[in-house]
Amino acid sequence: MLKQTIQITIVVITFIIVFVITTYFSVYLFIKTEKKVIIPDVSGKDVIKVLELLSENHLNTKVEGTEYHPSIPKNHVIYQEPKPGAEVKNGRDVSIVLSKGSKWIDLPDMRGLSIEKSLIILDKNRLCRGVISKIYHSHFNNDKVVNHYPKAGAKVTRNSCINLLVSRGNRNKIYQMPDFTGISLEESLMMLGQINVQPLSVEYISDEQWPENRVLKQKPKFGYAVTKDEPVYLSVNRKVQAIVNKGKSGVSLYVYTVPNGFLQRHVLIRLNIFGVTIHVYDDFIKPSKKIFVVIPNDCDASIYVYQDDELVDSQIY
Image 1 (spheres, rainbow, N blue to C red):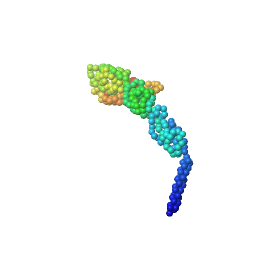
Image 2 (tube, rainbow, N blue to C red):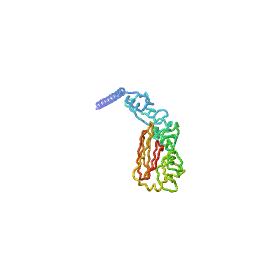
Image 3 (cartoon, rainbow, N blue to C red):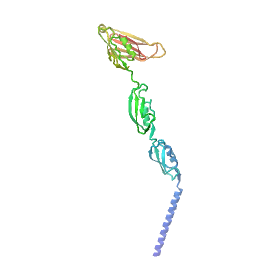
Image 4 (cartoon, rainbow, N blue to C red):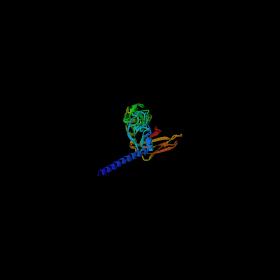
């Protein structure tokens, strides 16, 4: 019985020894025959090139994070793990840290650019849109950047807020309203034309103490500040008989001939009738062409002709 037990024990021990030896050599041979690769150097390379390079070498890319770097451009590798030259198995992860670019940048010069383009530059450089102020400026067109703070070339960090000063364009020139009281309508219109202001409306009233066709009232009043876009109202004296006898039938025909020349002229014809102002013509006209305007005889009317924004003719009906 003892002899049989000893034999069984020997067999079991022998089996264990053979199994261990076989397993060891199997693992050893597997490890020795498994293919290995050398880690390439990806430092400073663009992330797209890194993905291609590691993939070609049967390695995986693992982005561990991003950091600011004073010299390595954005989306380029700052450092890697394992280090270049290390021998690893196929399919091993290579961890990389990417650059967010420099934390400090030289602020671009946005003076003279449109506000839309300037905001695109701020967004592209991950800069905050600060306060946008507007002023009138004689040298910068509307919506152009006059200046900004900090100044161009200043060192600023990402996410810094940049304040912009934007032009509203050239302020309309301001004129002092002349005194038209007692002056003829034609002379008043010529004076308005000299300061580039056009009357919005002309009405007729009667006052026996004043000569006919003289301005009795005006709005704005004498001395007020006006611009070329300011509406101007004139009240002109007409005799009572002329106002009463408005029932005359028929029409009048006004004819304007564009002067000779080589270039087209911009012609604007304004008709004041029934208390309103009508633009009966507003277009570019060839030289020598005639323009006809029909005016009813049974109402007060006045017509004003502007050529290239300059008053060249007027008629009272």
